[in-house]
Image (cartoon, rainbow, N blue to C red; front, side, top):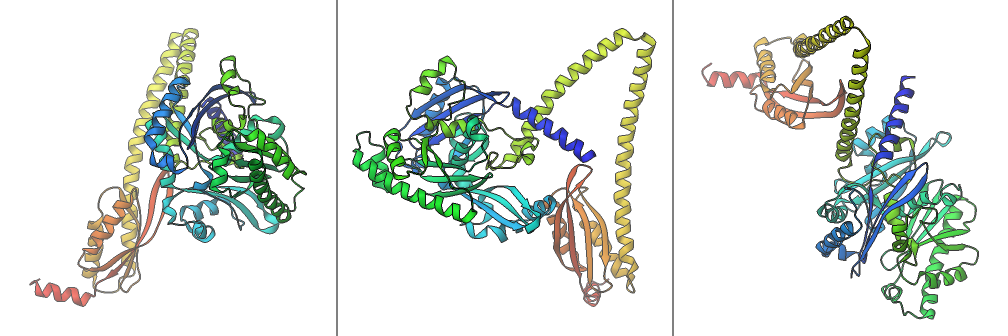
Length: 552
């Protein structure tokens, strides 16, 4: 029951924070930067900001090679669009991401979390997908579905190299924005489906094709499980698409080659997953001749309805933005920016209860950002709560008698005093408990001592003197009766544990000290490092000889 109440509370807080957040979508492509901002009220969307600036970029590498050019353009765009919001959702190219639906043996959430924290899950499941060490990647994962009957689960795995993400984050940060979401462009476009009730409410398979001079791929979503595949387009064809005067014959040949690949991928997908035939495709493109080539797409794929995705079809556009939104004949160019504008930073874990591909976030330090936003939210509502309490107390004070107020004030004073006293006693208790645990560990070790009490005293004294500071506590010491002593304890940091091991290695009666295990434990809502250290004792004969040599 308590678990259900906690889940409902977190769900409510999550929705509340999502509704109050303001995020601007930033879509950076080599030839253009587009920004968009939306408001949502009862699932009705309103466009509040929209802008774009064109550049002379010719390839994806232009963003990396000339970042200052994009920073300056973004600054101009933010100023001209009068965007005040600092939180930004940013997209990265599909070519910079690894996207995979990974089948795994059925695991509980706790087992899955532990496997992820120890990196053992990725080593076994996706290591072959990564070109470098896993530490070089930002990773997002989420369970798509569980199948108890087959004892299997499907996990969405999305990763991108940290260096690739940093190129885009650097541009956004230098423009004075605070990135809170990093999404892959294909999923940003998929999120724009939220703006189309006629598409987002359908349970049928969704197919989105990106057709352009920089990226070309197909995204198929069946029950929110994604399939993504690149589509090849030669350099010559890419350049032709950027030419407004390209001949109709060239466009027909390009569309024919492109359509053939799309049909092959759709056919393979249908055979593999045994789904109903896909009869419609949404085209998202940034090229100026999309309307001309759409005719050829429909000719090349006669059994499939191909249409240009218009994300603004059901969005309310205010008068001041109508001209700007209609200036581009191809409305699908705004798909990614608008999809990003629907994103929110998930502070309290609302998306843990909403599975799918609409919550991908590859921001490298997203947990730190979440914590900051969580504190802002709690502080903001804390002030509101204090104001409400203050007003309530004022009304209450006015209504009750003076004697009652004094009585309550006395009780509050006594309560606060008891709280202070309780905290002091708690500190004393914690200190005594720590000392008790150390003594318990020492007694545990002495139970196994059969001879040479002086030598074992030196061992225990050496262990005690090796503790680096008060932030490392011993909980247990085991002695096997021979040469092995096992030490168990807790520490606030890894450095304290390393210092402890280093100090143990310098103890004369300890030949070697090494870390056996280390894990994270939650104690009184605080995170601590639990560790196990094995010490191999020096031969007592050797110690005795050293003492004789020193004249002891």
